[in-house]
Amino acid sequence: MQIQENVPLAPLTTFRIGGSARHFVCVQNIEELKQSLDFARDQNLATLILGGGSNMLIDDAGWGGLVIKIELRGMERVGDTLIASAGESWDALVLYAVSEGLWGIENLSGIPGTVGAAPIQNIGAYGAEVSDTLLWVEVLERGSGEVVRIEGIACGFRYRSSIFKREPERYILLRAAFALTKEGTPYTSYAGLADMQRSTLDEIRQKVLAIRSKKFPDLSQEGTAGSFFLNPLVSPDAAARLAAHYEGLPCYPTAEGTKLSLAWLLDHALGVKGMEVGGARLYEAQPLVVVARAGARASDVRALAKKIKNMARERLELEIEEEVRIISAPELSTERK
Image (cartoon, rainbow, N blue to C red; front, side, top):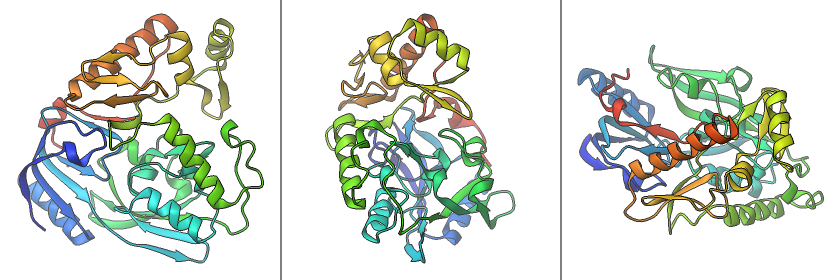
């Protein structure tokens, strides 16, 4: 394990913007992870856990403490269960499942990031979420230093949330297990998959990848963290009010409330698709997505997001939240045990 200093973080995130880490380390096993946490504690440094960097925006000022990049590797099949270490690519796990003929996570094809980040965010797409198949996770409990297993049912999953997101200082994800099946059928609730009821696993995966390629920018060309905002969850009355005013607004009843299509509202109600602030803009093909061109700064992205949130509040009486984790300047001086 080697602690480095003044390491640029922009190349380690899919936004490709942001400052440097004062201290930086890659960990490849649990012992190195514990050693890095000990170093941070001894030096009184705030810690930031980094996976694939696909769901965060690093401040232009960087991170004044220790960034710990998780590079734990390994995937295995045990019966119809797939077990993967936190540093593995999420899409590599999906591809492995498809190649093994196992159903359950194929609708989540093409999502960037690591296995360790997937349960934290309860990633989801096209009618599926990680919580549908997660069997258990192994985590390092930061308070005790012990490795513990948490069953999927105890992860407190909600829409794009979990106990790991709500209590970020408590656990560090190490491994995750997914209960899949050889006897599955296509899950086609998403309109773009409606004609795929008799399709194979690989056909579903290829269709999902094709849909994503039309909605999300090419990461080799522009920086992005995918969907920047969460679809709002509102009361049925609030949903009915908006739907009455904006004919055609997609609304989806859930156990947590009525989910509104924010992409539809940004396009049809606010007309902000393609809006720019500095080097940041709302993507023309999917206004939930913020893209950053070469030379953009994190402050551009934050200013654009603030503008959109203010417009939604003033014109729609709607509070919207970021899905992307904002690593903001005030955190640079905050102690994070």
